[in-house]
Image (cartoon, rainbow, N blue to C red; front, side, top):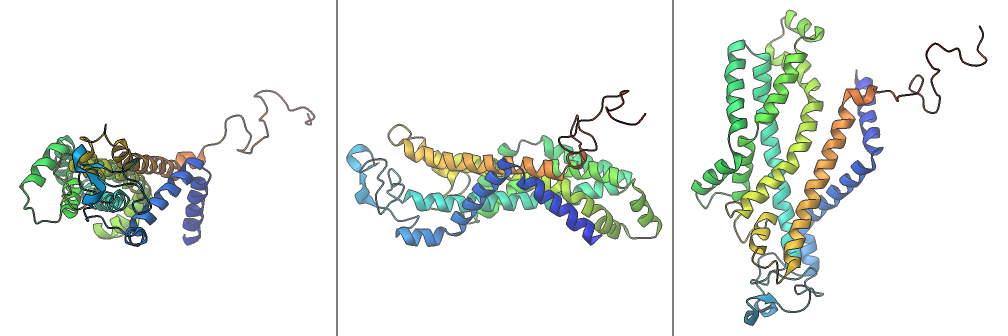
Length: 329
């Protein structure tokens, strides 16, 4: 069993490496994670931080525009400074990457944990439990996440950590899709012979779920989680853009875009940099999630090339009803 699992994992990695788009997306995300983790080191290398105001670098006569060309880019400020504050833009982008990744990954973990628990209980439990949990899931899917997120983040005390609040709000309002996927898979899996044999052998439901169902649910859950991450990045940016997410002086890409709306004509670079970071991150996660889905899909693994014989390349199959030339009668 261990050898079979190792072979399957090797095949998944091989199919992922065979996709140039997946490799490129993984490279972009690796660079992004390294930049986010190395933000303190890179800030020290530049000699700046994310909260210090530089009044000398902005022109109050022009409404707070950065002095110098291209938003104040210089040897001391590699990407310029923020209009109106003079804070270093490079360091704030790095700290914004930390917030975006932390909130997106944390919210995804909450969604997956909650969705798997409820979906597994609904699919493997009694009919009454399935009905109750399924209706609860339908309600959660139908709720407007953004409106509820605005309401919940507005009533929470200001001293509560905003990244943690965003993780809880986004995660607990968006687990419905995960629960539906897990429930549907569980209903199919529990009809299989090995699951029925485990139940007839007297295994407790928790043991059956842990030993027989959860390993089989890993592939669809991982695939769905990979798709959830970019969605959660956009959700965090949307809440911060509306001014109810991360509060200053903590940096966030959504918050920076919200501030940049008043400067997009005077300082286009201040708008383009966080927007480009957000776009590249969401695109990379989306492409990688689609590649993971294809690599884990059993139909992709078993699909044979049309027009080939025995799945081998370059060997055309003989037309039906015709004896290949040179074959013995």
